Amino acid sequence: MRVLLLVVLSACGRVGFDGAADAGSAYPAPTARYLMNDDPTDGVRDATGNGHDGTCTNCPVLVEAVDASGYQFAGNTGTPTLITVPFDAAFDTSTGVTFAFWAKPSTVGGCPVGKLFGTGTANSWQVCASVPTNGQLTTCAGDPCAFADNQVVANAWRRVVVIHDNVHSRTIVNGHPVIDIPTTRMIEDGSPITIGGDIDNGAVVLPWDGVIDDVIIWNHPLSDEELALVLAP
Image 1 (cartoon, rainbow, N blue to C red):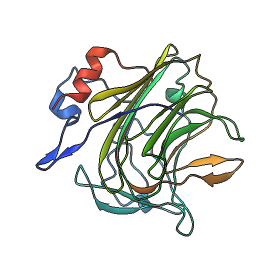
Image 2 (cartoon, rainbow, N blue to C red):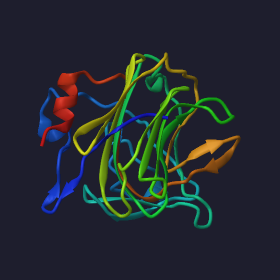
Image 3 (cartoon, rainbow, N blue to C red):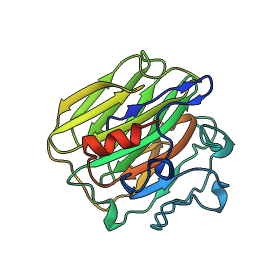
Image 4 (cartoon, one colour):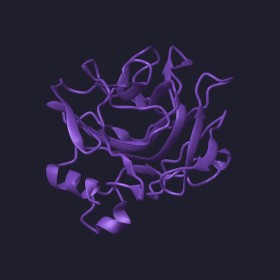
């Protein structure tokens, strides 16, 4: 699992990330970005043009969200909704990774984003949240995991950005750092990325119950300068 940065919405709109178009050419080019503005049954489009499109068999529902629209995931209600992004060489994040997203959990939570490792229970990187468990956010980079309480609230938007650089796993919540722990070298293989849940031994576990919007993945750890651009209002 992995640690991320979270930014709240203000009464007048979102605070923080406004996208690459607003930040100019210096904005770090993502490896993949999912704006979630299209009907997912037609495919989940990678807005970067890099072709890392996702698919879903049981798809989430298009709803109003932070940036125009996002995807409502069903959690444990019926068949879990899940998006899968096939592995590509660009997703080799063994030297580090950064990922960001907006999320609004229901009263449950689940695992919004992660990358599998093998066919068992391991992940290269991942983040999960539990509203009932003290609003706990959990992120992992290979084996090391970190926990932070009081980070997610039912039916409230949060922004998450996670940075792993094989030295530290960093988490920022609502614009404030909440976790910075040592981590060992990340594990990597040709497994897919999942959005909306995790897969253990072939079965969906901890499916996300709530809305996810604007998932962004970089195949390297952002520098402090790049991070400042990502978080700029």
